[in-house]
View 1 (cartoon, rainbow, N blue to C red):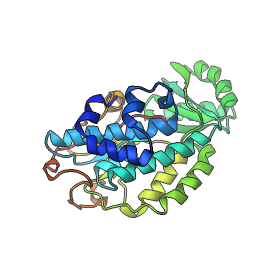
View 2 (view 1 turned 180 degrees about the horizontal axis):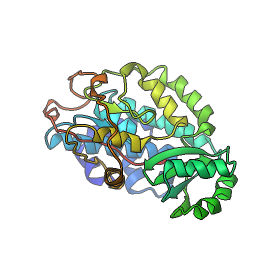
View 3 (view 1 turned 120 degrees about the vertical axis):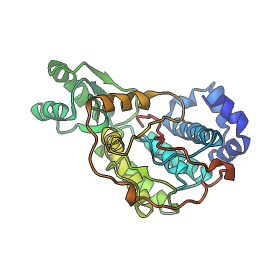
View 4 (view 1 turned 45 degrees about the horizontal axis):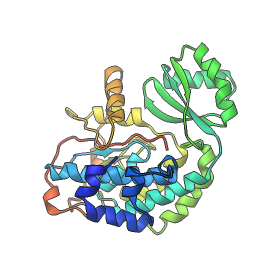
Length: 306
């Protein structure tokens, strides 16, 4: 992952190495000690590759009108819009990953083939009050979080309710749920020293599927840790724009597939929301001037259940 980009953007890689205290190139391309399987290493690596992918996209000409990212990808989207520079972004995801790695409370499972309301009804019927909805990835793809035993106990009821599948995820904790409250509180303390810059174009928040305001970016990033990722709602809002064109930037095409599913069966969520974002037009921190041309209606994201 990132091999060609690392060689093309050595200054950015050097910045990441300095902040992290280790070589991202060795981590991604060698990974002899399997550190990349651990979220405290996965998150900075994914963020850097996403950031370099975005810089490469800009080098090809243009910039997006609006951006969004799934979970960790929200940090890539905020970097793209100029909320913080590369070094700050690396520091943010490094601390986020470290804090999340400390949590071992619970797990996650994906329910395929049921809607959000159908999933909620099964949880209600089973009295599964310990289970939270963590990711609303698509109309029929819902991720749950909670105690592992309680999740497993729900498998048969979901299959009986005609779920296509119920899959336990390989994650270390119940991310995007109430069980991450301590992690969120510690991250809030870290964010007190981080200054966010005006956004050059709108960034849609995972928490409420509305554009970030610079004054509340930190609060929303804290809330994201304990809140469901509202990806379906995000895409439906973007679908309400005039002839939206979606493009996934970075490794993989998971989000592109989810977007196609949402567009196929969901109606746009009415109401324009672009006016809430800053009209700041300064260049992105750390990006060369030639990277500023317009690229219309590109929506950026990287899927990551952490």
